Image 1 (cartoon, rainbow, N blue to C red):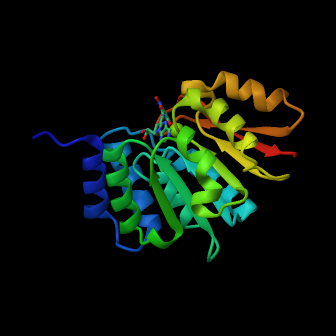
Image 2: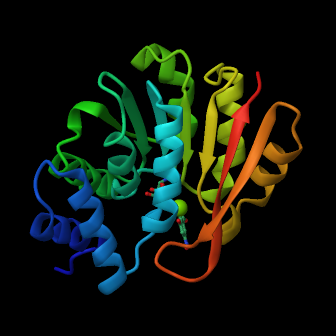
Image 3: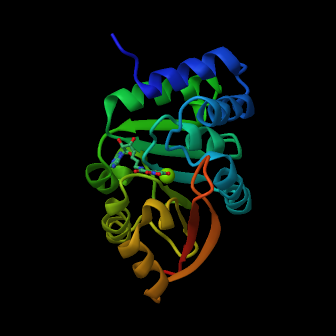
Amino acid sequence: TQSTRPQRLLGAVQKNATRGDPRSVVQAIDQFCRQKEWAMNVGDEKGCILDSVVSEVNPATVLELGTYCGYSTVRIASLLPPHAKLITLEFNPDFAAIARQVIAWAGLEDKVHLVEGASGDWIPKMTEQFGVKTFDLVFLDHWKDRYLPDTMLMEECGLLRKGSILLADNVICPGTPDYLEYVRSSPRYESQYFKSHLEYTKVEDGLEKSVFLG
Ligand SMILES: O=C(NC/C=C/[C@H]1O[C@@H](n2cnc3cncnc32)[C@H](O)[C@@H]1O)c1cc([N+](=O)[O-])cc(O)c1O
Ligand SMILES: [Mg+2]
């Protein structure tokens, strides 16, 4: 039977990356996506912006919405301080299965909790299931029409505190107009746009960093 693109991406990691070396896993995926098949990872250019925000925030608790193959999960988890926790939500079981193996190859299983399920169902359960009070950093990279409803849900569930950072991928391409309008016009957020390019292309895209003001 035909393999899927995520399966071929995992194969490239197992072939070209060193077990336990997150940077080599990231490099293997970027090489696969540049040379073989494009895939919707945040990529190396926007990935550097993601890295700098993670390093600056130095978060103890991180929520990622939309694991896909685990590329950004590995980038974020590799920068976390000891005892920090990254919870990543993925509702497609096939993608979740690939992501678990990519995260394991990077040797980051202890820092990552991959939850198979939908953000809308799991955001309200974060505190009771994982003992998380608030998130220091949230990386939004799932369906673009879910960014706004899930952000409002996180506010309602009290998962954001004064200073929590939301970092959103693809605010230009494919675009998240309703989310962008909300975080840029709401008095409860201080927003900043980091101009970049759509992964592995010359098309404009960027990340929006929004600080929740409480
Ligand atoms: O569409 C894009 N991303 C959607 C990502 C979706 C991923 O998040 C999961 N998901 C969705 N809602 C979910 C709710 N709960 C849990 N997982 C969820 C999906 O199963 C998928 O693994 C995209 C597209 C382009 N592009 O150029 O076309 C570029 C990008 O960088 C992108 O991120
Ligand atoms: Mg994306």
